Length: 231
Image 1: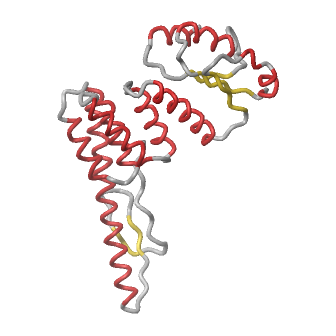
Image 2 (image 1 turned 60 degrees about the vertical axis):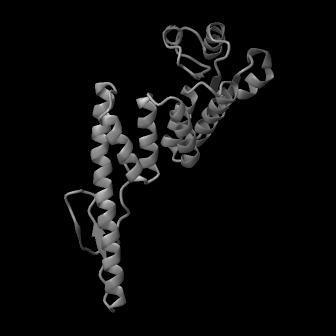
Image 3 (image 1 turned 120 degrees about the vertical axis):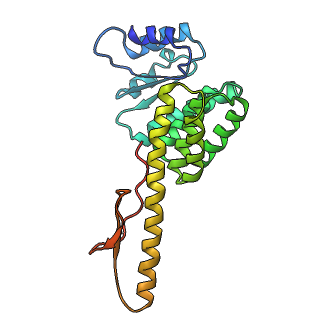
């Protein structure tokens, strides 16, 4: 019931993901059927450990419904969600929301970052005032290690007329990006110094602190990779 109320109040919902077995109230199939009455075009992804029984009752599945068998890996769930969002884009290529959701899937999994960046840039060119999309794009750049582009976008959002919450989030992420850029530079300098020392016949192994205030120092362990951005 709460899910249906949310669906009524939130027209931007682009995908319903539900378990077939519910602890109370409607089960997943009943919820999907009611949701389809409200939004016939809404894709529905059902998950269950009883997919064989469900397959034998194909009459229970309306068009636009599919299922994911339990247990499933996060990658399998991401692939199913990506498939539904791509179908939504194919049906309404002018509607921007699925692009942002698809980009979020790539942000969470780390897959298809380049294509997510390209499609989000394209939709932003048609919707230049969507600061929320710009923030997702900045996160994608940071996830891909392009801190320069991420920083430029975050600076623009922080100085824009976006809502206070989004501007504050941009400022906080900007601090993270700057710290990661500084740490990456220290890492590269440490690697150069280690290589030069090795060429001279010595062997000095260095580490790079993940703390932006720290620096490279001799140690007994190999250099650590620059930390990825926390999301």
